[in-house]
Structures are given as structure tokens and as C-alpha cells.
Image (cartoon, rainbow, N blue to C red):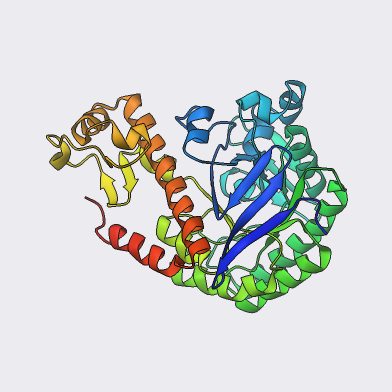
Length: 372
């Protein structure tokens, strides 16, 4: 039994809604976690993020171990105090960034040695060190270190990385111990090979974790492949533990994954799009760079309770984007995080009402309009 309660209040098909309860607060599921990679959700204040309805944010071991350093954050009171976020934080183990950002890396059975993308300094990350860093940061949800393989890849390469990740999962659990009020999630790997996904899931369940993540997707493969892997993986995971799809994604990806039983999501998409002049709304994605918005006095969504969506005209936002003003990036990032949280609020309500399929179909009608 996990020390972290996960209460499933209602289900609608495979979709379910509930909450994951930590001493710092409950995470209402399905949940979208804004990405605060380097101890900040880019272009937003922590209280703005909370006001959108977010219950949890994500930080990253790779970036924080390099700058400012986990030991320094611990001396300063931990990540919650450091970034002014009193609610739960999930920390990604750093494995994906080591594989994707490091200029030089050498992988072996014990861990990975890599060169910093910041200053070229050499570092060593093992399952035990990753867990230690996350403890120093004060993470509420710790992720095991894993190896994420770029797709496409051969079956042999995918299987090798999956089995190594399972070995690292066992070591991560041993290093984590049994702290009160904190959770450890295992990460299912297996690329785009269905039977390897099932093997990975079953091995992780045998080890036993507080929650289970599905990793190694949303890395450029078609949506159909991602959904097919979920169809194979989710049934092998325990019903009574949370399921987290890492790095996903678009609103369409999220709702199709909720329909398959996923509870938690994270993605840089809403803030990255905001910094590049794009807004996510219930009417579709709006490209504020387009000249058609230059004389439009309407807000992005007059019915929203988020000031960024409700109180600023499209003409003004277009002006800020074209002028390269920082405020434009801030407002659109705020608007996008608010929209994602509204999407999840609606999903939770629809599951509780038994109308999730209708809710998802209605949302998709808006997105079908494409960029406007």
C-alpha cells in the first residue's frame, strides 16, 4: 500500500477523476502540471500559476543540479521555498535531458557521465544520485532515473534501454526508502514496441511504486502510435495508482489519453507557444502574429475568469507580439496555462457527470478550426 492516498471519485469508461493527497495539498486528477524546469514556470509568477487552478508544478533534476545546484537549494530551504510555490512539486529525474541536451555523454550499467550544456563541466548521474538530488530539492513526487531512446530505433536498442530502466527502477526504489509524505514513480519504457511496453509495466508493478509514468512517447512519433502504446500499457498498470504520461502535450493528446485512463500530464507547449505569439482557447489556437488581429477589439475569450484571456484585446496582444514586448509573452503564457487548467477542470466535471465523450467531442470541434 502506498503512503500517498489516491482517491478515485468517479470513472467514465477508462477515464477517471479523483485526487492524489500530499501533506502540501491534493492534486485533482486528471491534472496538467505546468513545467517549471529551472524553478520557474517561464514568464509567470507563482501566484499566477496557482490562480489558474494548477495544483502541482514540475521541476527538473538536470537543470537544477547544474544551476543553481541541489545542495544550494537545500541550504536555502528547498525548492518550494526557493521558488515561492507551497504546493506539491514533481521533479523529472533528468534522464531525458541528459540524453537530449548533453554535448558529451557516456552511458554504462551504473549510470551516465555527461558534459553540461552550460559550461562543459563533467557530471555523473546514477539512479541513487538522481534520487538524492530530488530529496535535496524537497520533491513531493520523485521520478526514477531511466533511459529514453529516440525513435525510430531497433527493437534490440529499445529492449536494452527498457531493461536498463527496470534495473535503475529497482535501484531508485532502494535509494528512495520509505519517507513520509513523498511518492516515487516508476517509468514505463519500451519505445513503440507493444510487447516491450507490457513487459516494462509488469516488471515495474512487481517492484511496486506509488505511481507509474509512461515515458519515451511524445518524442516525434505519430499520435496514433502514442495512443496504441497507451492501449497496450495502461491495462497492465494498477487501477488504484496514478498514471502519468510524460511530456504530453496538445489539448487533443491530453483528452484522448484521459479517455485511456491517464491521470497526470506535463508539457512545455502552453508556455512555449505563448512566448511565440500563440494562444490556446476554446475557439481553437490563435496566432497573434497574424495581421488580421491588428484591429480586433475582442479579447481572446470574454467569458474566461483569467484576466489575460478576458481583459486584453487581440489588437493589443498582436501589437505586443509584433513589437517583441515581454508583456506579450507573459500574457499569452498566462492565458495558455489558464486554458489548460480550464480544460482539465472541464474533464474532471465531465467524468463525474458521465459525459466525458461528449465533452471531448465538443472541445475538439473548437480545435478543428486550426490556427486563426
